[in-house]
Image 1 (cartoon, rainbow, N blue to C red):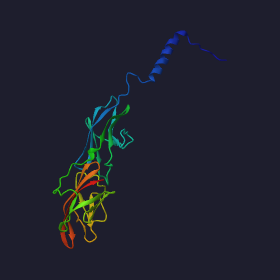
Image 2 (image 1 turned 180 degrees about the horizontal axis):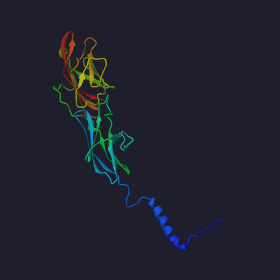
Image 3 (image 1 turned 45 degrees about the vertical axis):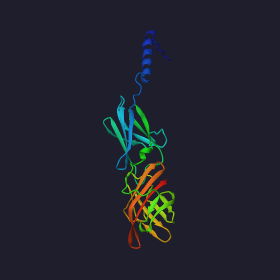
Image 4 (image 1 turned 60 degrees about the vertical axis):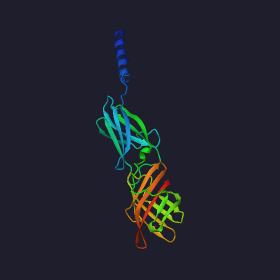
Length: 268
């Protein structure tokens, strides 16, 4: 036998109100939407120590607990936190991320444009700030050299000064020929695209290291290799064009010391 306990009409209204309150408690009050952080990237600059410094500011941390802030980047113009995300160093309302541009080789392709974007997170979720493009930022400051030879010439000391008739730059090297038949070859231990504002150094080693260049030349009769330790000044003029200067670099010619100077404009 089933026993029914009918609900008296006077209890129906309070029960209905209770159910409505329970249902509304499962929904976020539309008057209080998620309050996400607001962040901005303000600058991207190359430092003298071969690093790229990205700085930003926190405009608002939101009303919930602030968790973290950082930078993401990619070569497309809408990077997200899955694209090379880095946590920032936070100091008050400012933050920064430092990228080592030369970490066992170039970190970036310096013929490309990269987009850096600020991100932040609090208990309400992730938010993104603005995006800045960095291309000419990767062009180091112009390095001054102690000499300025005539453009596209090479001085081989007692052998004479000659004009380059052809200059090419295949991967990680420069091949140049002179009007009188000398071939001058530069072999880089790493890409020549980025110098970090510092000169490369000549080397005689067969085992190349980043930052070093082996410079040799021959005409079939006379051959030479620049001694270790001379500076090679490579200035990035435009995204594809470089100015290469060597001043009075010693080399040995039949037990006597000669000096090599050159300046060339290279498209790479």
